[in-house]
Amino acid sequence: MAKVIVVTSGKGGVGKTTSTAALGAALAQTGQKVAVVDFDVGLRNLDLVMGAERRVVFDLINVVQGIAKLPQALIRDKRLETLWLLPASQTRDKDALTEEGVGNVIQEMRGKFDWVICDSPAGIERGATLAMRFADAAVIVTNPEVSSVRDSDRIIGLLDSKTEKAEKGQRIEKHILITRYDAQRAARGEMLTIEDVLEILSTPLLGIIPESEEVLRASNIGSPVTLNNTASAPARAYLDAARRLKGDDVPMSIPSDRKGLFDKLFGRRAA
Amino acid sequence: MSFLDLFRRRGTAPVARERLQILLSYERATHGQSDLLAILREEILSAITKHVTVERDSVQVRMDRGPSVSTLAIDVEIPHSAGMLLAAGS
Image (cartoon, each protein chain N blue to C red):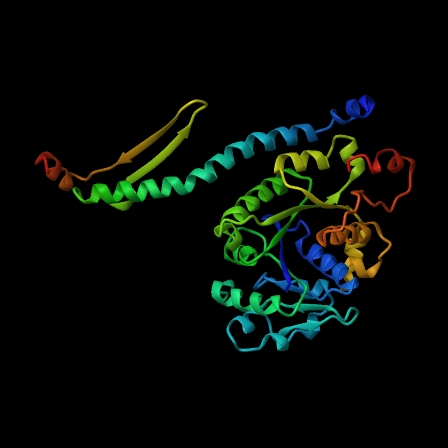
């Protein structure tokens, strides 16, 4: 039975799609069967970040509407045989997604995978609420920046009230994933620290992804950052975060590409 | 770590932190009450329309939170035609 995870944030551009691809590939590398699902109908991008944009035939809406069967729409990754992608539709609008239809697709996927990771669209409208609706756990992607933290707070409120789990009176598991973190700027007081963000959001930390050029390099060539250069700082941070998702006890650290004196002094302090 | 703390407090991050804490304490309270206000508005509206004909938009329900007490303000606009009914004492 799969664990269903929603990767969400409220704010756009904070790294939901990058994180979905990176965590999905990281889990699949450990042999787990993983499906990543793009809920951003009309603005799909997970296919592009995964390097599968030319292999899309059917999409989530086709499956929801019964035009295609789930196995026809799933795209198997060319690098990892336990990783699959269910793309969003680029042409239809989000109203084509119904709660019942999405529920049925998620239910079918639960039986086929170990992990189903739903990449939420930005915002708090229908697409975002449907992406989180059937989740067992949420990864809230947050940049250490005021607007992102505010939107994360709003999303946490929605996770606690609008998900199926919340409505049944159960607790949805929530994790903060801080992305684009710059330990040096935080140490200089120019960026909210990890402690600041966690204290404000009162939610446990899944991982800290450092700001890195590797993220753009990986998306340029259509590879999850955890596949492209597994030794890079963001890849190591995502690999650790994926292990924590599985329940492993991994000490928190902020991987760094730079090996200067400054990093030795400050790099790990915030963890 | 006092040296680091000295260093840290000089930037703009503490301002960001403080602004967020103030804003979010307010927003958490108002998002929590928005459902309550919607319910109150509907029930007040249905009670009024039993006796007076009013437009949906002419009923305003607002809650102001104070440190020790909150106030609920209900503002109902009654047109002259409906006012006749009120004068009749029904």
